[in-house]
Length: 462
Ligand code: UDX
Ligand code: ADP
Image (cartoon, rainbow, N blue to C red; front, side, top):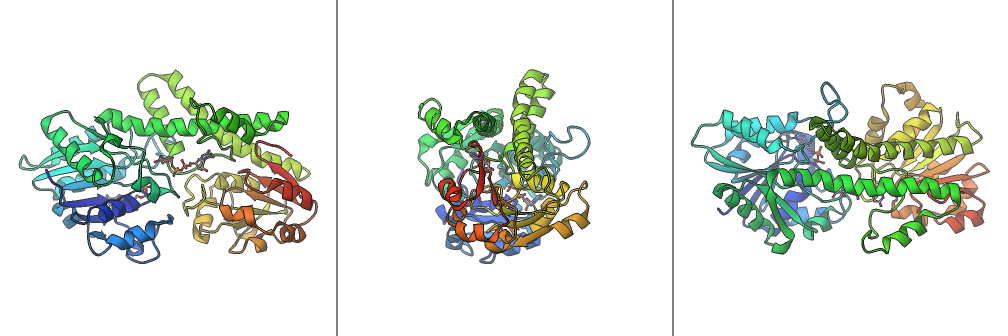
C-alpha cells in the first residue's frame, strides 16, 4: 500500500515538527496537520511558529503550501487521508481513578471517535502520542464499534523519541524509528507502508519493528531509563556537595566506562519536560494495575528523588540567605525546562519559584524564549494567592534589569547565553554579599569567585 495522503491530529510539540519533516522529505505525499486550537493553527501558518525549535522554521517553509498544510478543518483531512497520526496530548489525570498517575485518554478517545465517524475505505491509524500500554486496543475497539464493515483499518504504534530543543536534528537523523503492529498480513502491510515513508531518509537498519505492546511499552521504558540516570546523578550531587567531590568530575570518570556512557549524567536542579515524569507515573500505574508493587515503588523513587532535588535547592537558598528570603529580590535566570525551547511543562523552575514565593521572596524572572503569559499561568497555584504573584513576580526581557538590586541569582535553565553574561556588571548591580545558586553548573565558577560572588554550584557546593 502506497501512502499518498497523511493527516495528523494534534499540532503540538510532537505533531507539528514531525509532520513538517515528513512533508519536507516526501514532496509527493500531502501532509495535513489538524488541531481544534485555531490560534495554534494560525501560528503554524505564519513565521511566528507556536513551537520554538532551532532549524524548524526552515523545514516548515520548505514544504508549507506545497504539501504541508495546517488547518482546523479536521473532518475532510481525515476523510482524505490514507494514514492518520494521532498526536494529541495525553496529560496525567488530575481527577478520579488513577489521579496523579494514570494518563488522561479523553483526547485520544475523542480523536478515535472522530476518525470512526468520518472514515471510509482503508485507513492506517498511527499512535504518535505517548500512551499507556494497550491503548491501541482501546482505539481499535472504539473504531470497530462505530464503523461499518466496508471500512477497514490497522492501528500502529510509532512512538516519537525526539527531544525538544534538538527536534529537527533528532527527526532528520534519529537513533531509531520504532513501529509496532499486528502480525497479521494486513498488520504487516501497514507496518511496511509506514516504514517505507521513514526509509526515504533513514537507513532501514534503524527502523525497528515489534508487536504493538512492545512498541508502546518501549517508549515509557526509554524515558524511565533516561530519567533514572538523571535522578541517579542528582542523588550523587547531594553526596558530592557534602563530601567535597565534584559531580561533573564523577560523571566524567564513570561516563568513560563504555558500559555506562557519558550522556544524561549532567546534574541539575531536576529534570522537567512533558514526558519524563508523566511516563514514569504511567509506568508506575501500569505496574500497580498488574499487581507489581515492588516494580512500581522502584520507578516511583525516580520521581520522588527529582522532587527532593528541587526542594533541597530552595532550602539551600533560604538557609544561605540567613534563613529568610522574605521581601528579598531573587533573580531567576531561565524558566524553560531546558535550553533551546519555549516549553515550560514540568519545568523545575515552576516548583522552585512557587516554593520561593511561599517564602515571600520577590522574583525577577528572565528567560530568552518563554513569554510572560506562560510564566504567570505556570506560577498560578491554588496554594499561592494571586495577589502574591501580582506583587512579588516581575518578568524581564533584559537579564541585567532582573539582576538590579537582587540579593541572589538562581540559574535554573542551561541557556548558553548565561555563560557569557557580564558578571562584573552583575556584581555591581547586586546587593552584597552577592549570592549565586547555579542549578545547572554552567556559570563560570572561577570568574564568579574572583569577582567576589558567594557561589553555590549544584553538585559542587560552595
Ligand atoms: C525526552 C526524551 O529525551 C525524548 O527521547 C522523548 O521523546 C521525550 O522526552 P525532552 O523532555 O524533550 O526529551 O528533553 P531531554 O533532553 O530528555 O531533557 C529532559 C529533562 O532532563 C530536561 O529538564 C533536562 O534539562 C534534564 N536533563 C537532561 C538533566 O537534568 N541532565 C541531563 O544530563 C540531561
Ligand atoms: P505534544 O507535546 O504531545 O505534541 P501538545 O499539548 O503540544 O502535546 O499538543 C497536542 C495538541 O493536540 C494540542 O494542540 C491540542 O489542541 C490537540 N488536540 C487534542 N485533541 C485533538 C483532536 N481530537 N483533534 C485535533 N487536535 C487535537
